[in-house]
Image (cartoon, rainbow, N blue to C red; front, side):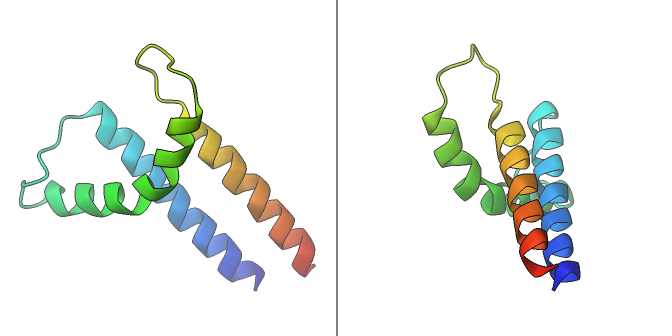
Length: 85
């Protein structure tokens, strides 16, 4: 069960990292190669990042919601692994 929790966490981490990189680089969602990756990354992370972004005060163009989500996901992972040990 711990392996499943770690696999889900690292998959989510990779998606969030991709989302962060895509936010730095202008990618067309209609590009034949990068478009599908961008859309998958956006559609899987936005339901989690959106509510966190709405709770945070405006930071002058900085979006710190991925950092908050990564910290919370890491804490949740630690709690779940501690539960199954």
